[in-house]
Image (cartoon, rainbow, N blue to C red; front, side, top):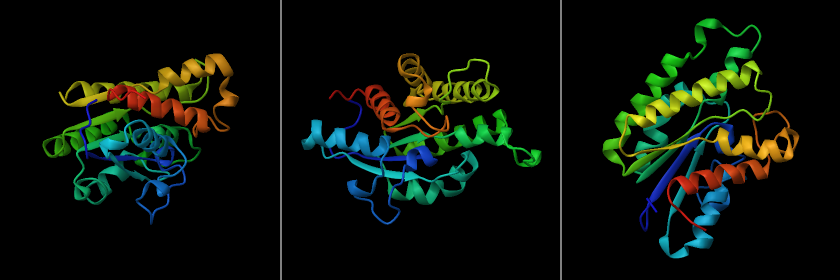
Length: 214
């Protein structure tokens, strides 16, 4: 496994990462109901002696701009050994909101450049970073939202490929595999926020990428 005994990992993102976490509780009991909490539980149950500390810093509605604005306080000041980032859903959905101010939209170039800047400033301070793609929980290949989401997934892959200690995790692939078997309605009510089974798929993809077996 890439993480060492006693490592601290900050997992940051939007509402998918937040998953009803308790803002005042940084213990495992405050990690929320999603993939962050599930990952922490699997760490503790399968490797209790490792003492891995998981910190959830997901905030609903966040975009890459929001992460940049709070990066110092919510990531660097916590002095993590590892950082996991899952962002992009809101950056994409903005493009499909009626009457959204075009001047405030986050285009592909800005998204890629901001994510790159975050990785550049963080890598000298940590052992590594995990960059996970956003995803769309709809199985219509021609859906414009899905097409746009895949574009931003590719941007995450491009950023990760430029850093030796960056671990890339494609979340769309395992979620697509689930949709093929059980249908999108069993995964999400809004094609954005996954049910528990989807969060478990995200947790498994994350843990598999860092070499954690349970």
